[in-house]
Amino acid sequence: MASFLVNGLDARSIDADDRGLMYGDGVFRTLAVRSGRALNWVRHYRLLARDCGMIGLPCPEEAVLIAEMSRISPGDATVKIVVTRGTSGRGYAHEEGTVPTRVVAAYPAFAGDAGAIDGVRVRRCELVLAEQPLLAGVKSLNRLENVLARAEWRDPAIREGLLADAGGRLVEGTMSNVFLTVGDRLVTPAISRCGVSGAQRERILDIARAEGMACEVRDVDFGELAAAGEVFLTNSLIGVWPVIAFGDRHWLPGPVARRMQQRIAEEDARGG
Amino acid sequence: MASFLVNGLDARSIDADDRGLMYGDGVFRTLAVRSGRALNWVRHYRLLARDCGMIGLPCPEEAVLIAEMSRISPGDATVKIVVTRGTSGRGYAHEEGTVPTRVVAAYPAFAGDAGAIDGVRVRRCELVLAEQPLLAGVKSLNRLENVLARAEWRDPAIREGLLADAGGRLVEGTMSNVFLTVGDRLVTPAISRCGVSGAQRERILDIARAEGMACEVRDVDFGELAAAGEVFLTNSLIGVWPVIAFGDRHWLPGPVARRMQQRIAEEDARGG
Image 1 (cartoon, rainbow over the protein chains, first blue to last red):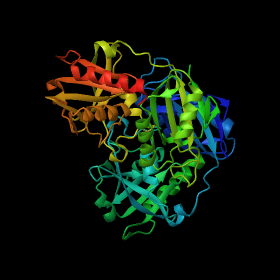
Image 2 (tube, rainbow over the protein chains, first blue to last red; image 1 turned 60 degrees about the vertical axis):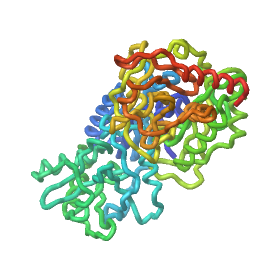
Image 3 (tube, each protein chain N blue to C red; image 1 turned 135 degrees about the horizontal axis):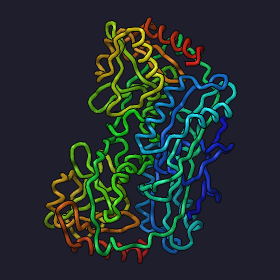
Image 4 (tube, one colour; image 1 turned 30 degrees about the vertical axis):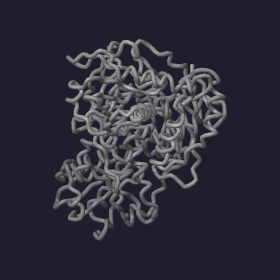
């Protein structure tokens, strides 16, 4: 079971008229909390604030969110922060000064699983992501594409589905970002037309650059996947999942994925 | 103020964990109720059921919705029906048998205004609609594009913004469908890549065809707008709004718009 704070109050519910429900008029972030402390918080908050700005929403103050996270989850948890435009009556137009709704929800912590150790099998989704540059990167509440893409398969041996845009470019997984190694470079798709920029993706890029690894954030053809030296998936709960199978192509978990797992663990232990 | 029934119960709130909030995982319809009776109901229910089917959601039974609408609005009202996938825990995957959430909300009736009589001025929005054929026509809860498009202008003299797709084709208004007359034909954009199919749009096409008017549902170049004999907007609350100005182009409310207003009024009086 989850517990919720809605605008700072213990509550299990939100106004049925909230624009978050009615229009998906809001943004969210999902993160890991350990011993009451949000991991990778600096990047999470920066992305949350950026996303709020992209849709013209005031972002909650950082201190408020930190206090609410530690209140709702003094131990370990998966925490979801949702910010909506609040209630402002029927119709797409919203008045100046509408008060946002802030939800901080704590779910059971993701304990980790064999995916990080043994690697995972992935598939390509049939759904093609729509291209909306105004929302590219934003983790908005408009996630019906992800829901439909995730409903394409039920085989539990397939842990993730990869998504392409209309140009056949690789964008992301349904719940993760994707990295490839090409020679000695680290490559991840640019999130400029569609897709979500995860805080873990930002961290991987920061770590790799700090280590002097050449990083390329650019269009990635789906065909490059099969030719990649390593492929791995990232999000704030799974950390890094090495990809070991995509169609006929098989890999062993590679050294870059293993090093990134190590660096993330170190940064989390240090309180990065 | 609005009143709400959530799964048939008098309630002002929904579960904060509802997938309608978290992912926009649901659909809705907005309609006019007069003396407790939903206008244009047959088309509204058909579209609601189709939309539910498009995202794999069980549609509430028609009799349940009719009973709840008349319970919540014995008189005149604007009613919104929302169906979400309900709560099924965190993550995009949803289990078989998740129980949908059904919201029936009654807002003050739209009294009508000068728009239908005098016509309205419209603008072209800068936002370009993303193309997702799997959701084209569906009135899903993913409406952030409409929110952003409607936020582009504040001039109250402009009543609606027209939206194009990436190919520069006219699709719809932020809250309405669009019709043009070209010679003696009635033309409306095909809703095959993006956009919402309104129940009023379906009704206008049915009426025009029954009258023997040639109707074309097809791609419409934005350039055709300025050359059109008449342009009008439709939705279930405004009925038909003749467009009298778009950029430099001006029109007087035309005979087709007037005839459609008349036919709709007749059908509503008859209980169509």
